[in-house]
Image (cartoon, rainbow, N blue to C red; front, side, top):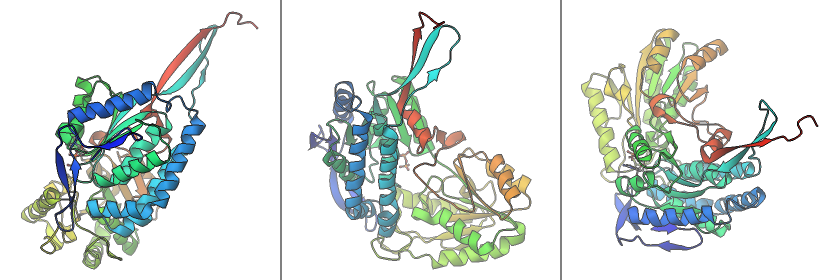
Length: 481
Ligand code: ADP
């Protein structure tokens, strides 16, 4: 279903076409969803344009915007369980993870950005000469946002939170694999009193709805999360149309470095979490586990044992750590990477195959003896496949960790503060987690170096993605006074 102009209506798409969204546990259809195309994107953009140019949202007091966002957060909190259930049904992630971690994080993010709404302001600038100079920080306009399927609600919140706090209007395209939860969340924004046309959600596919949004002449800014290859495509579409500024949050091949002095049991547990969390479907997954040679053998045996203990099954059941992969494409792709790992000579310690005959489940898989040149050490697998590599010294591991086109995140596991500081400064990545991993917080900025992206989301840094700066210069008639 497409959703135009929050206070207006749910609508079918112009073409009347729909697409099925599937339950990854079984591959069966959950619902048929209206399939947005460029004409639907046009309608959504014109609703957002009208709401920005004439509507109350950008002109409301910041305090009024803040109160609406706080009401949104309260409603999301109230509907925690329904949202979590939709997330699990459509995406396959464990329900406990969705209900206890992700939806509460969504609430926290919206409250965080509600807090920013009345704290956005410009500067007084000391210029040469008799001028009174100030800057106004104004909303940028209609924001186009394209999100992926691995964290449908969190990606929705990372995008809409800062955009709304700054007074923009939005057209957001969900991923075709997971259209449901954002539609439900958008309904709650409507119930909280968000004015008509401020938030528009379009369901549909990338090359049609997504491309139409990226190349739309009336869209003032584009924010994209997804693969590096698609990031290049949308950047080009944005440049070729109206040069709208683009923020990109793309792929990764993050190193997780276990130093010689590490507590091996803790390092094994954290490295396991860093890779296997969310079925391995995290852009920042610690997917190259570098282990110092002195603790390597022990680490490999314990990592294998931990993977064997991982509880895989129906994500709606309690105690499940791992559900199915998102869809058959990803499932097949992961199995291809596993085959390539075996063929290239890595040691398959455990796993290596699908699990069961229904749905998209994959065995938790661990490879040791992985070499830098192997595909499993270079490409983003986006699945439950841990690759363990051996290193001798810190200089070597820094060089190898940085030898990738990506630069999203890194984990460093050590008891030595000097080692932690040295590695932190040497790694060319947007986030370094020291003795922790995947610690997300509304206030902590996230984004990539190199081909992992452009710009930062979350935190104060995200606001500038959604603001224009206007310089105001006013001559002083009587400067001596
Ligand atoms: P993945 O391969 O993990 O599905 P993608 O980068 O293809 O990652 O998808 C992320 C988002 O980008 C989804 O919402 C998808 O529909 C959208 N998308 C895919 N192709 C395009 C495109 N050509 N133009 C705009 N958006 C796209």
